[in-house]
Length: 374
Image (cartoon, rainbow, N blue to C red; front, top):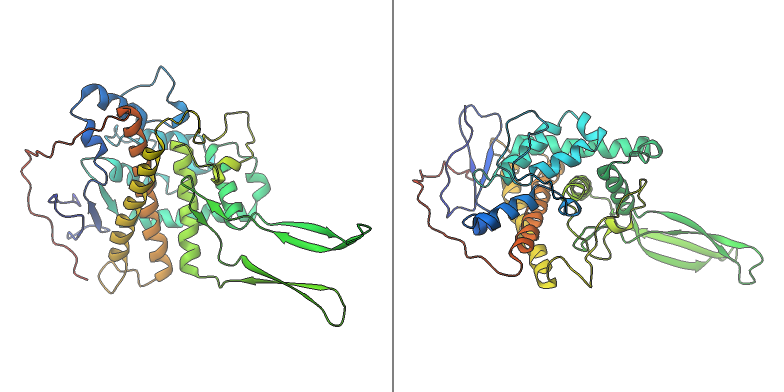
């Protein structure tokens, strides 16, 4: 059975329930419409697709094909422009290739990125949330061995994970005379910072430090004050870090100076993660700002739509707030990274000459499927 239905353009996101479907399909309208803006120009469309199908550092290769690659899952070539770049990042990572849910992840990205589909399978999102939890657990158990994994994804995930938990270091503090050690203190980072400069930190990390004199020992006492750990926030943050690492490994959209990606100590001889070159930026600063805004808007729209679908007492409600937070974040971050890459490629190929989208649609649209009532 085909678990989808046509959607009118006026609807932003509608949850469609069809008898016999294993999980609900969230049908989305076009998030940014950048491909629709260039598809009428054959040369621009070709350049846009070429840019979309590879990471930024690979786009100087002369032998880049303008045809879609065959998916890792073995399915036929996809119309999703960004999928080949994600497949390349997966192929580079033994961990991802071996994961039981990698096909579900690639299928999900295909559906979200294909201009003719733009849909989200809630069941696949749940599997992706579980996949992220498994990968973080592996780093916890055997961080030293996994640090030897030279794949871009593994190196980014390890760095993002450490940064999120504060990249904790303990250092000694000398006495005033310098003749000995007065004590040991903890140093933490600002948290994981994504490529647009947004920071995420484990809530259990100390945010305040109090130093006072112990009246008995007559020596300084250091007290760390940490906020409470919220399972919903932590679950969503871990899923975010996993997907940010994967999509950054795939697309490598240039990052702001404070991004964690620029602080990775690469274990193999290669070019570092690209930063926004202040002297020769690939697109203008205003366009980078537009890329960031468009990405955040896409995340907000999909997070809200998925959150509505997986909460409440309806047929597809999870009745589990922690799982719901992780699932809605998975959908939102995927939408954010796809929109970010799409907008970056659009501004690169148009070179500051905006294209006007033709809103003429000759398709005959059937009424939208029955929407969920919440």
